[in-house]
Length: 76
Image (cartoon, rainbow, N blue to C red):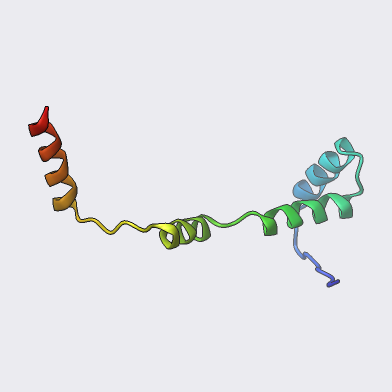
């Protein structure tokens, strides 16, 4: 397991993190670790978009889609 040092964190930020840690009945270290673990486990927006693009199977042009819509309207 690696060690991470965070330097130059403002006093206000540290005070707020200590309050939040106490509310969660955690030490500041445990609270910060849980925040970082959660952040690392959450996919970025770019990753989600890439996964969606990888799953797309239909490759239709706008012209094809509009043509199909018009054809459907003509049937009704």
